[in-house]
Length: 419
Image (cartoon, rainbow, N blue to C red; front, side):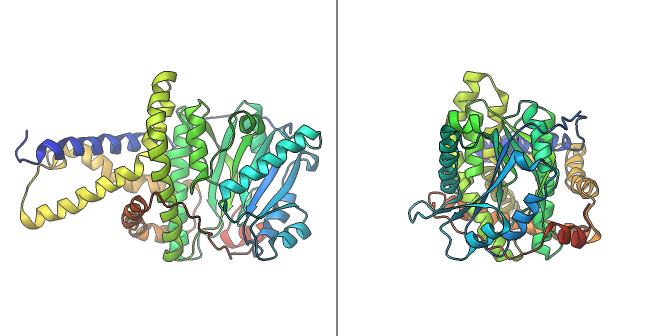
């Protein structure tokens, strides 16, 4: 089997990559359907709706107006804007729109994770004093717009016993540029082949930074303590280690502003990569142990999720080595060259078929089908980003993403042809 000196290393690594590829591939197909569900339509739970905002005066007003128009009893939710280290008039705009504004200034602790932790403490103090009693928090970014049924869908999940819930991550501007368009396709894919798929088979979804819902009892009992560059993933893995999975609410839709330029998306994704490597290094060892102790496969699946950037790095290295073999001759055995052609054909067809199915499911406009043609280019830009994120994984300086796509909910529906 070992035809070359390097095979003793290269063959096991390729087998590992193949196993991971098949694992993600099989799970991905589980996101092509949805389980039937009888929903609870009686509003019961009370929400503190939190909007984290840093210099977001251009967009926060439209979100507050949108949130005030949700299909949920007004006495069962309050809107709070965390004006975090703002140097513009975000607080004034949010207050004029009708939100309760909580201003925070801290030159040392600047990330969204710190801002949320600060706000959770304020909510706990309110509860202790008897001012407000909430069942859960719903968390949004200031650039978002929210489907009118969002809180009703979260109420349904909470009434069924779920503690941590992620809503459907849609795009507010999927047709603005090829970058925002391919970014939207990436999110639609992840929504289905990861979050929905895993929920369908009993595994855990992963929080996505916005459109999140968490019960106050979980926050009080286990604490937030998620303050890195990807606080959503950190809290997901911390909770999963403690036996609490994240549930997916497919009809609780939040529309997020996607970057318009490759430069903007590059810096945003680099921050995500840095944060995921950071979380992976800190949580994979303890999650392996916790998975064994609890005999919980969901925790081990979380480890595999955290391993994804390493998987991409390793795949990229083999891609480069493949080109070198073409130029200079073989120096290791390529296992894919000797695998049954049917397996490779199925993988290749699936890579193209699944995205097309999902574009049909989300009723994407013709423009998205054009963006699908350039999607591979967007995907390959992840390769240098991942390596850069790995190199800078121990740097924790938070960088703000500027949002400028100002529109209200009705404008978005008209522009994007949404219902």
